[in-house]
Structure formats: structure tokens, C-alpha cells
Image (cartoon, rainbow, N blue to C red; front, side):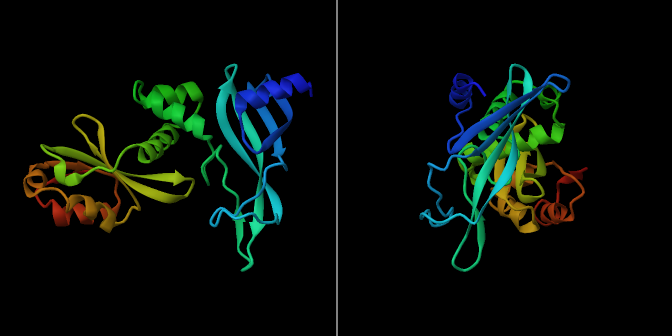
Length: 238
């Protein structure tokens, strides 16, 4: 590949610890695939202890990044896998992408920013993604950036919505609570159990809790139990 083009793309994509090997553009599918290998000049560290260590093997991951010239961009990166003295295998952390997530951090930041100004359905259609994918990306980004909320300071709530979102595909769930009257996200916490939602409801003042008329949620029994025990006067809407 042209070394000047490689250098330009390296600066444009800025994937620390990765060296671009090749680029493939498929005009029929309007996709750009960028293939990288781990830059051996960067030392490998244990993600828990942050100490230098040896490599057991290298694993590949495919990450969706911001579009290039209007084309979907997939970046194939290579991460080091280490083996601890105890025999535990760990994958090194990467500044480019969160663990277990298929989309780059900058892609998620752009999606979340657009959600402040555009409907989720419009963003999903523009990027060719599912509505649920956009929603999950936004909720995870908000959880990282928003300061912790204080339910005890919430006032004049009438209708709230409760939902669960997977931070990473198939695991690491979070519970989110919305003010349904203005769409504001008012609470986020890891987990999706009865106790997680109860922790939010029990922090509300008695006056605020009594003022809640309805709670919108899916059919999850854990959330239903928490609402019935703590908001007996509120209607549950599915």
C-alpha cells in the first residue's frame, strides 16, 4: 500500500497501538475494511495490574467506526492476550473501543451527540443500524458521561419509564429510568434486578413517590415487583 496513504489514514483514524496493513474498498456494498496488526513497539500490560507482561497469543476483533467518505467503515484490530501466573487469560485494554463493544468510542460519542438533536429512528436509518442499537449506544454513553443522579432531589414526577440496556452484547446490563413527560434520563445503574430498581424508588421522597401515576416498562417481573412494592398507587403500563 502507498506509504503516504498509510500515514494519512493512520493520522486520520488514530488507532493507538495498531499498524495499518491494508485497506479494501467494496463499491458494491459501500464498505471500507481497514486491516491492522498490533504495533509491537507498544508494550503489553496486564489490564488489571497494569504491569508489563508477556503475550500468550493475539486475537482479532472487528470494530465499526465512523464512516469514511459516506461508506461504512470496519476496522479489524489485533489485541494481545496474556496468561497470568495463575493461568487466567486476559485481553489487553484498548483506548479505541470498550471491552465487549462492537463500535469504536468515537462512533458511540457521535451517535450519542446526534441523539440530543435528532430522533433515534432517523439516526438508525442514516447509519443502517437497528433502532435498539442506537438506543443502547446512547444509554451507555450517557452512563459514562452523566454525573450520578440523586433520586431524593427529584420533584413533581408523574409518569416514569423503566428499561434495561445491554452495555455489551449479551451481558453487562443496566437499568435506566426516564421522566416520560419530558424524555429526560433521570437515573442509571448497573444490573436489572428487583433490588436495582428498588434502590431508586426507595430514595424518592414520600411526596414524589406518591405523585407518580404511571410506570411504563416491559414485561419483566423483577421491575413489576419493585414497582408494586414501592409505588402501590401507580399504574403499570406495558
